[in-house]
Image (cartoon, rainbow, N blue to C red; front, side, top):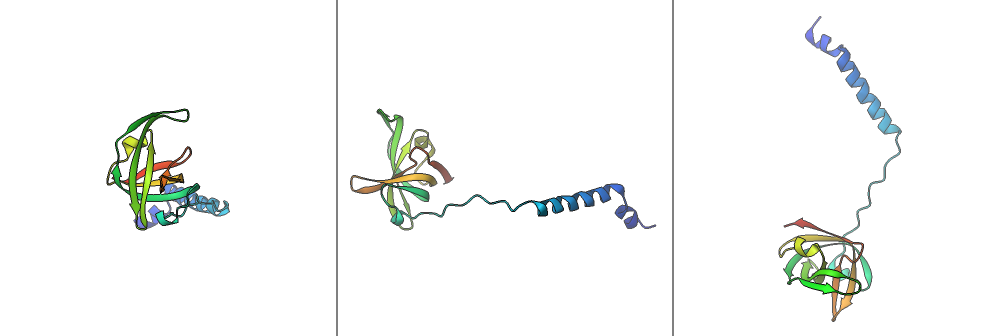
Amino acid sequence: MSVSMIANNSPLEHRQRSSRRSILREMGRQKARVSPKITPRTRVEDLIPNRPVGRIELLILRRYPRRTVMSKGWKGSVAAACGRDESGLIGLVLWGDQVDLVRTGDIISIQGGWCRYTHGQKVVSTGRTGRLSVLEA
């Protein structure tokens, strides 16, 4: 008997092959899982004031100094920033920990944010429920 025949008939290899087949069989039986929906990227020129922003990616051109705000709706750090994509410039409002997270030159993504119109310009922020993440530093 050759070595290859002994290896092919070993109980361990037989169990491994049968377990692989059962895993594949089980995967075939499962319903296709719905992948999380990726929100299409919004461009600056397509932003509409007083509307939610699904997802926007921006290059931060400048982050202005931190201010401390104490109002009825917010107590903490706030900073303004300016960002751009291929279609234009936009102002940003950074809240709380976002102030320390974002630096000039970073590429950020805002998901579930908000666009508003202030002092004649469109401004984007995460709002109360959005998320900001740094994609590239």
